[in-house]
Length: 345
Image (cartoon, rainbow, N blue to C red; front, side):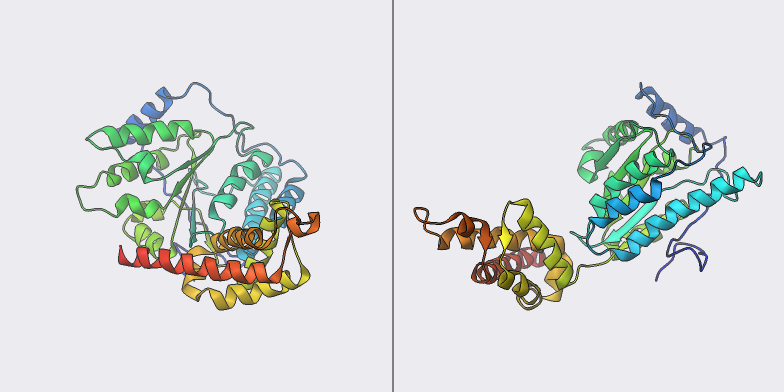
């Protein structure tokens, strides 16, 4: 497994990297922080010195119980809570913190589309609120290149500063972060990244916690091209692709959320449909999106099969094996067509 820095063999899969101390003489960093502060009227409070409340672990386990797969991510989240608990115990014993001054909680989420990165990112502020790391009104802000990069000189920095201000005291989730450096040397995305970096190195207590997400290869290249940022990433999470059995669980859940059910035969057929109808590459590129597409197409197959005038309540609410297999065939054709578009682009 790739590492951004040294890790302890007992860290449960977490990679912690100490953020280097910053210099107060950096006028540019201070200027960005001033710009952020000028855009903020309400500052969500945070207090890292209070004793952590009870029930944090129970809250986390309840949230994780509804997450399919992602066992390594779940263990990393448990270790995050434990890390903070141990730091609190050190303070109780008068030992002080072993973390370096200015160490932050910024994160990287590696993973293919549909692996639950955004869902877990939305859990982070709630978890940190429970631990009293963030205030009760800590915002969660999801942004992409289109939200940060402007069309003319000065617009990108203004857009980025505005978004940082909106996320102040909370979490700012930068999806497909590697696209900020995907262009040529004249691309304005680099300016957005520079502005974020200036905020990350400012030691300003109310600044957002940044989560950068995207495909693993592109994100690794992104961090290699930005070593200053890589040194400041405290945690990295690896989101694995879903197996056919896990996709089956997701499909069953999505079916239930539609007010429908699967017959025993339909449910038993799902793993083979996911494995045989969709190539490993398609499953890797779509993941949970395949389950959504298959359920949608299976419902269409059910609707085509039923007679609106005579269908019973049970027939209207139950996907049969034939519906699932027909839906799988239709979904596979659509996915292959879309893959062709992506590959030809």
